[in-house]
Image 1 (cartoon, rainbow, N blue to C red):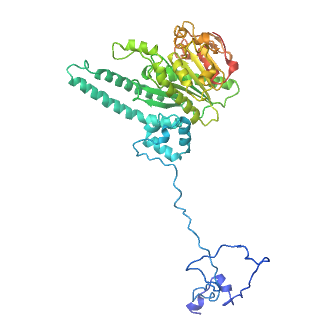
Image 2 (spheres, helix red, strand yellow):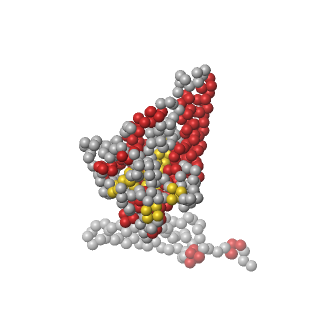
Length: 491
């Protein structure tokens, strides 16, 4: 039997190789032009490790079968950083004391910056610094909703601490609040705590088919709480409505109601459902709708802790001051909806009621073509000087179309004031829409409206629970769905 050394075998290549190969003679190469030939391979490496000209690299001594075989010279390779990818950019420092400067820009710039951020960066900001983005126009609606919802318990705890401190101040003061404003401050803090309760109850009524998104939550900048709630995602909707209310509107008093169709958000949900119904009948079931109740300002209000609050509220509703203060915020909100949308050109309609029609009109004057149409109802005037502005036109409100609409109930005395500029019912280029009872274009009987409040507010049938949309609401839905053939005109 052969010994161990005789059992050793070489690799297949080595077994097939000759024991020695004579070096090939160098053959000079010259080009036809007598110049150096072009390079057809990798350049030889230079430096100490390079093989000298005329020499060949030999295999290590003692390698069976490779003693005289010239080895191939391999060019130097730079390592590939597989485990060290380029850092993601931009990266936001969530530990900073101030938010990124990009969040203070115009809504379209904010929207572009936000969309360009990596998804994990956006998620990190929403989770760790929600106060930075919840109320910023141009941020995606679902991100604003997450951020603002997370702020509710934080704001509640802050307001409770403030309330308790004010109560301690009053308890320690022999004169109570007679010579301080602590009692009045405490009253407004308690109202904001009620506002938070209302916001939570409103959001809880959302459903998978009609989700509710909290696009604004501000318990700091105003005397009253501010909020905006969307039914349906405005970023993905083809048709978006924004409704702004007027005198006497507060979050706790108007945003929600006892029944699902009550309150501003209930009305918004009914408007969305009716618009979707009309789109279905028109053969456009794939078009989506979002309706928003916007209460982002201190509306004129006659309630309060003081004896003169009624007088103060009367002065506010007779002045343009509240509207001028709110207009830039609402304008930014409109522009932000347009910028954040994933649609190429979303159809956005502005709705303004009562004093909110003045707020809406002044806001539209500050937009940049983000709103397509406007609907004013129960309007005491839309601003402007009666002498310099004898007639309202769509161009005055920066609308992208020439379509603007007016509704006026019978016995709506506010709508006949004409207090803020010309009376829209006699001095405007509006399409007047009916508020009277009758059968609509889809063969559904509609109830009419009277007075100053019964426009989008639904009625109820004999059981007191089944909502009935009025003719005014039907017409507003036809406007929102871009369904001009469905409109019923009338004074």
